[in-house]
Length: 232
Ligand code: GRF
Image 1 (spheres, rainbow, N blue to C red):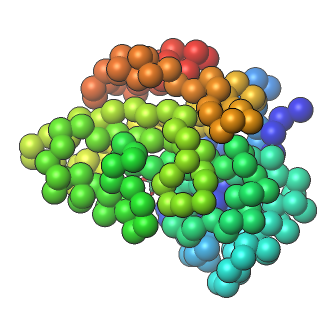
Image 2: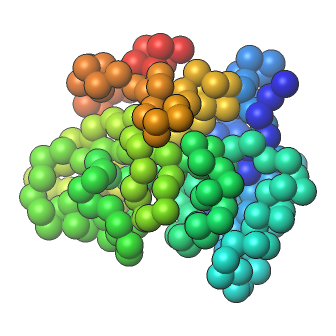
């Protein structure tokens, strides 16, 4: 049986698209299906991406401070796994408690640096450029009660060049998000990666393998390298 995945997204939905396309390409080998996409913005591109793919779109209530509305929807739809794909709201504590080890977030920088409240999208890339670091990247992690915290499942580095601006860096990072997030989601959905009872990640991207990346590799090589690193 495949896991039932809910995607929460506030923005344009390119990560949702990458996930849907990846799971579709895996066919019967996929570990999960996206059962709905929920957004806090009625006009979010993610809802249009969901509709294009025949996936239900849900607009979240403007105010749901304790997450009861969201939790109710997740339960009604028998959701197994929640993916935050560019979701800007903090997930309420009771939802996090109900889904320990079953919420995944993608962040467009190497956490724990350049993360936390307000550090999303262009702001994260701006902070990376201002700090003058030479390497940024993508982090996929389990979600706990705070912004961009929780056990790291996978990180993939991306170079920062001297002439980068937020747009060029964001594009280079996004390409890796699109390759890494779907693979990690499928691995968690199928049980190859899990959070154990001690709160440690089992089956995560091995640390030594994360150093085998190829900067600016062509699409096919990037995907293959990530597959190899995840042991797929
Ligand atoms: C991505 O960079 C994601 O990491 C960040 O917001 C962006 C969302 O992009 N948190 P999209 O909506 O998936 O296109």
